[in-house]
Image (tube, rainbow, N blue to C red; front, side, top):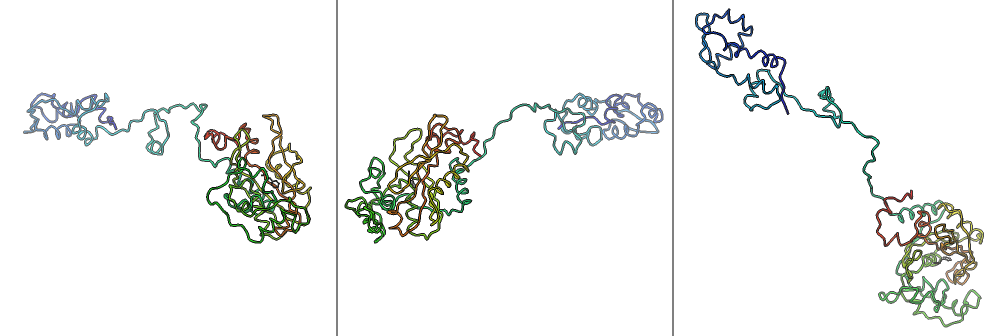
Length: 402
Ligand code: PHE
């Protein structure tokens, strides 16, 4: 806050306050004579008499004291932009000789107050370099995998699928036996599968388990030869971290009535050595189409449609083998960065040894696809470990995945 002189204040700063000019006259002096020299004589008399500097007798002014008048030097100091004490400031304000001014330097930001009080008048504005790059802000974002999971769910909902889920800690029965994976299959070995110490045993469906067992042994109701070995219920009761979401499909098949289209997206676990394309835990996108009228061509069509919607053009299908499907394929996309084809998962038509014991008597198209690999390709990442182990915030901040 500062003060400046009013018009009257400026005048008196220049010619002297009325009482100051009065005190400079001879004493005594005739009132009329004094008024000729000091036209504001009434003001001069008012203040000088108040202070006891003058007396008036018989039409004459008698000057009793000729002191320094602090108001006069106060005006001069304020005119020079100096400060005066509070008491004097109050008196000058009361006499209307000075007024408050808000000091405005260079205006940086035009506020409501500056406009309302006309403070911008006569001020200059700070100039801005509008070319300069501002500070980057990083608002919260969903994780890349969350984003894509949501997108993929939308794709399957669009195609008329329903979503299912199942437990991460699964019985060997749903993870392997129901899928006609023989009990001595290498995929079941410790080197490939994580077994749980607790719970040691899982509850598996009575009757159905034995039905599945007979299919393993000699084909059971299916009329095939089966695997020709002695099936062990105890092995089916072992608990594992599910190695694929195909366990969810097996569970669904035991419950549903055709026709049905079901998908599941979830974590799976494998005892893998970590490298740029392998993780011991990753996410799979599982799907089944249970319908009297579908064929292998439909399976390729669904897969192609899915990858096209994800934005891939260059895909191919390789013949493959799984204990639970025939025909079987592995969809692959070309990985430009590494100059190689990358396997994206597996697919096929479930064998009767899988479907019949579960009570299904029509074709079942099935697939289990990796989630991280295609996303890694979409984002131009060279290494799948980025998603889980690098904790590299810039991946989330900079990724243009939307
Ligand atoms: N379960 C297979 C895997 O994890 C994929 C698959 C699912 C293959 C369904 C055929 C049918 O690799």
